Image 1 (cartoon, rainbow, N blue to C red):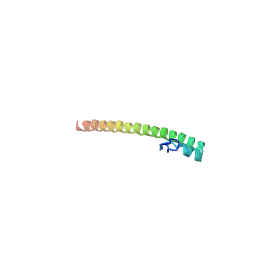
Image 2 (image 1 turned 180 degrees about the vertical axis):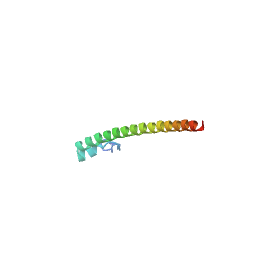
Image 3 (image 1 turned 90 degrees about the vertical axis):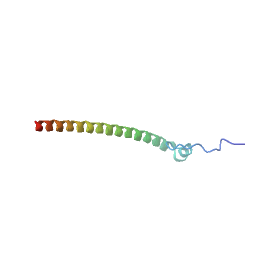
Image 4 (image 1 turned 30 degrees about the vertical axis):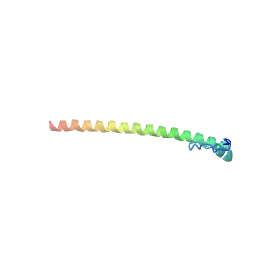
Length: 77
């Protein structure tokens, strides 16, 4: 008969396993989970900053191109 109690649990790579929590200690596991959450939030903020910077650069590029076109037109006339 198959015994479910001795079956290995499915390992989740994002969070520490129950065996690891028992071996190392619950405080380390909690710190790991919290630090992963904080790192994810920081990555989201950095990504948002990069997106805003790229939008600004595109607007600046368009503005510069428009200014150059206006200058060229003024020089031609």
